[in-house]
Length: 276
Length: 321
Image 1 (tube, each protein chain N blue to C red):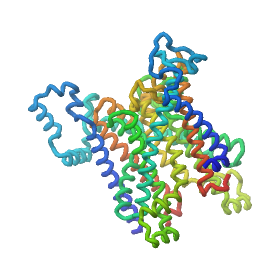
Image 2 (cartoon, rainbow over the protein chains, first blue to last red):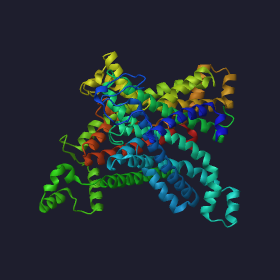
Image 3 (cartoon, rainbow over the protein chains, first blue to last red):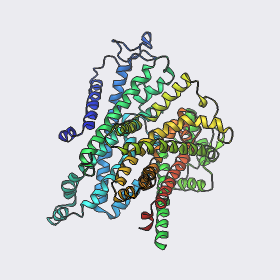
């Protein structure tokens, strides 16, 4: 994949941005942030950005850089878990649906259609509102929204692959259906899945941020980019850095993922080959 | 003709099936919440109910019935226009919806118009010379549209416009298009700009790709050789043929629009259907949430059906096949 990305400068730009943010996220997981992201320190309220507080402090004297870093860690965790879940379940669903056809296809197609009847953010919102809220249930709510996308994206290619000679040859050698699906069909749809993963990650980050902005994400005081922006609404003119820092970082994160997705699409999708 | 009618009938039957599935899903989802209407209404005081009182309330709310009976009685009520009652606003959910749905519809129409006004010309401009500065500019605009969350853009615009230009029409009570058209348009401006910017990005990308594809056809070369003026060529011949993917993409964005409406309506205090769901969730009025989510899904499914029809109308090839 590294070789493929080298051929796409925008993909490379995406990787650089994401690597930078990944370092920040890892620092937050290891507890190596300059300040405790939830520790309040009222005397140090609304300090402007300085060497001591890179992104300044908020209305409770909390260090904005540490909070943003922890928020990136939180967003990344939720997005990765959600998309991993959606990828595994959705791809399996698409494989079974396209390969077995018949009743399985009908049942999976029915569920897919029902889930597609909801606007994505509304579905995530409704699911998040009924679940006991913590980072994992938010990830599950987002995952459910993206499962049908993976089903639909994989089912089509599987349908056409099963009619191709080498798959038929594999059938005649007596391999079981699951062996054929995993060994002969799945490797041929990986590029489609990889592109979809990158794009879904960017939507997952946006969905998580929107949920926490609306107060339906991970509950406070856990730092989340969306809820930080919500809290900063009324502070824009007192302490603009409380809005600018998390805002810029969430945009950077999504831009990085979108660039990576576009780069992968340009290099992996055969329809785009030789176009650029 | 009969084939066409069969296909339409099949599509309608399919849609009804989907809607039934949606109703089941919404019903089951909201039953997953711990507690019921009684604890939601009374809060901690519910613990003080005697068993007899509790039983009476359960009977009153129909909670003593089986889930299947509860489901069908809810669905049956929806058909007769009984969507439930919102105790906090002292209004029936049908009344609430009749007020909020047109507001969101107006917002959606403005957003789509703005998105097309931004996305289509920029997409054509980007396609007019690939790998040029204008192409790169188009890519940057679309990347920004895809990457800037609606809530961030809305929050920023709201503060900046209010503070720098004293423009905050959303600070006062909402006016409908009938009450005060001028104020209404001012109030709709920023929300639809935010939503429109979000959808403009995929429309821009689709327009660019579609225009590039159409332009590589022989008939464009023929038309140019015949001396069709460039402007007419670009609009009638190229854009006309690129319209199908653009319309499809616009229809697909409706889901984003209805979801984004929740966020944008909340920020700009626009009393639309998205805000109605959010208020229902925040105030734990699950009767409101259940019926409103179903109405939104219905609207979404109908729009998809409509896009399908529209696309048959524009593209004679789809009609014939």
